[in-house]
Image (tube, rainbow, N blue to C red; front, side, top):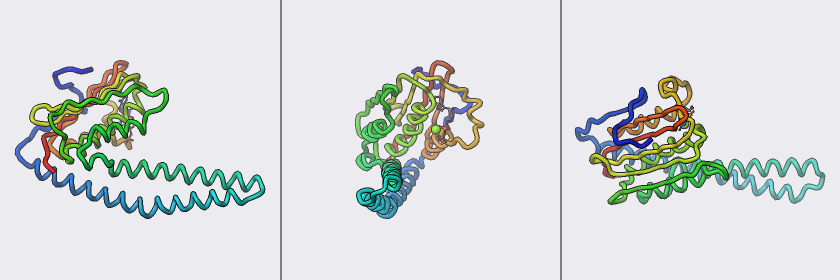
Length: 233
Ligand SMILES: Nc1ncnc2c1ncn2[C@@H]1O[C@H](COP(=O)(O)OP(=O)(O)OP(=O)(O)O)[C@@H](O)[C@H]1O
Ligand SMILES: [Mg+2]
């Protein structure tokens, strides 16, 4: 799927107006991230802690009840509580991937990948060729775009191989997420109500004056390419 020319499709977004404003975009992103961090803190301190307390109480209850029907019920409730705790931790990671704080784009992607990888899932190859670490603002945008593309590849592509690369390209950074899965018809998907991932991906890039281009071919696979200008924190 890899080619040097940009793929063409109805979903392609190419916004190349680079007349300043990148600093402002970087600042807006920083504010957004601070807000996410604040929300993550509240979820962590309130909901997560209550859920942990509930799980402990349910385990205590399980150890004390004698009749089997009540015991089964208590154990089931404890399992649900642990499931909810796991989901909350996942949400906290999504809201605030810790490595992003240090510009660790690839580390965050690796951690994300670890969370999605199943035993018989596709092989995933992450690769970056950068002369310096991306700024936090750059890492944040690329991480959020890469996450959607990666999750889509896992959920929809039935791929055997997924590749993610980040390189320096045309005074900016380019992210490519490709898979060798079933592919899809980009013209039809553009209208799919209630499915926001692709649209959000394009919007995230556009917000910093970048673009996303999607090239998908049935039976061959999908390539998501995103380019963003350099952003300072
Ligand atoms: N890598 C891919 N391989 C195959 N099909 C894909 C791929 N990426 C996207 N699609 C198709 O495009 C559709 C739209 O993707 P999009 O990310 O917008 O929505 P979604 O993943 O279905 O839901 P969500 O709103 O949770 O992201 C998907 O439902 C799927 O049919
Ligand atoms: Mg999606």
